[in-house]
Amino acid sequence: MTAIAAKTAAPAEILAVLDEHAAAHAARDVQRMTAPYIDDATCYTLAPPLQQGPETPYGTPDGLQKWLASFDGPVLVDYHNPVVTTDGEVAFVHTLTRMTATPAGAIGSFSFWFRSTFGLRRIDGTWRITHRHESTPFYMDGSFRAATDLLP
Amino acid sequence: MTAIAAKTAAPAEILAVLDEHAAAHAARDVQRMTAPYIDDATCYTLAPPLQQGPETPYGTPDGLQKWLASFDGPVLVDYHNPVVTTDGEVAFVHTLTRMTATPAGAIGSFSFWFRSTFGLRRIDGTWRITHRHESTPFYMDGSFRAATDLLP
Image (tube, rainbow over all chains, first blue to last red; front, side):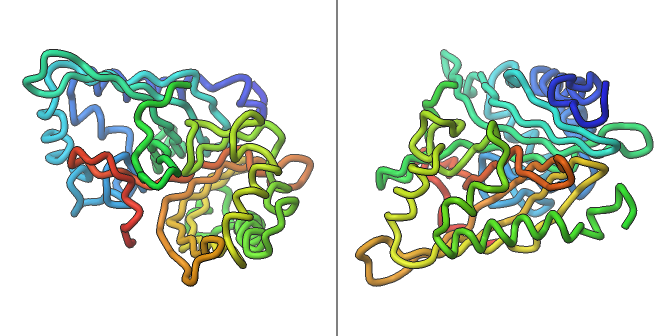
């Protein structure tokens, strides 16, 4: 693997971080979900506010546990053909992502697609997530409605 | 500057790309706005679809020109304390961003905040944007309304 052309030779170590992230969601295991993050990671998620942190609803393990409790069964997160760009000790990954889950008490699951970007650093030999950005666009028709019905 | 600790010693070259991007918007200059991107950059923007491209409303210089025409005067994009992480020939930047503009024919401007992530590669000695991700979160109260009223 060359240092720069990682876009076409995606490093297995970085993709393994995403695989584990997805497996942790499927297992509803908050400890595993949060393990790859540095303590002060900058996370822009689907839910307000602009940036998650220790004071925000989804910024703590307890908050994530409550979020998981809003679903029955596994929370499936499918990273669809992630593209890794890396050199040395820094990497970023972008991918379209499909989430499938069943709201607590509901009889059926829902699925929707969103966009994911991860920023990573290799710290003491281990790739850690330092930045995550997840979003849907929103309709520019005056409705300001989140576009949760888009397909790739 | 050390190779890894760029988080605290943000490289001036990368911040200059963002400064130029903002200046190009203020000048309403599509050529300058698109100049730093590689041809097949992966752009996730505020508007649908999930990913911009040559077939999408905002994926071409003509599309950007129409978008600019929907505003009177400068389109001000203020990158608020961007954080750069870089090593070698790869970098990513995350920042909260405020946009201020006046809709065509309106008497006053509007401002709102969103989240921006840029991925860059240094190609032939020049930092180029290979990935951009811009978004607002959306309200999880059942309205699915884009949260365009948030402040940092």
